[in-house]
Image (cartoon, rainbow, N blue to C red; front, side, top):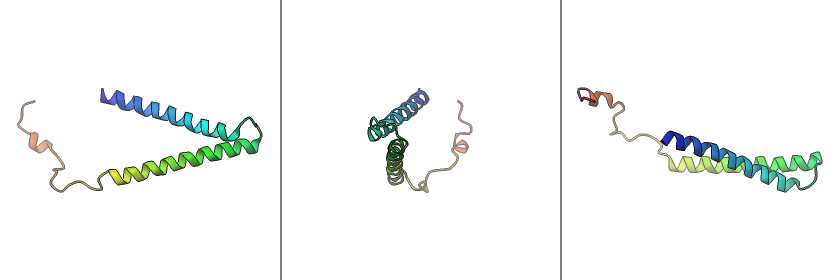
Length: 85
């Protein structure tokens, strides 16, 4: 069940993220269809996407642990030998 929730959240996040970036680009472009207006819209959208990526990377670097604690055994199979399943 957790795998399905993770997969759905990932797909919805991608869809919503793409929709937000397309909306940013369309708002910047406006009703003009000139190449320079489209370029400005796409450039702003890519800059917003890069900013969100950098923010997510900074949050991940601050929240995730840097290394494993020393008292956690690396392999638990040795502890489970002889225990009936």
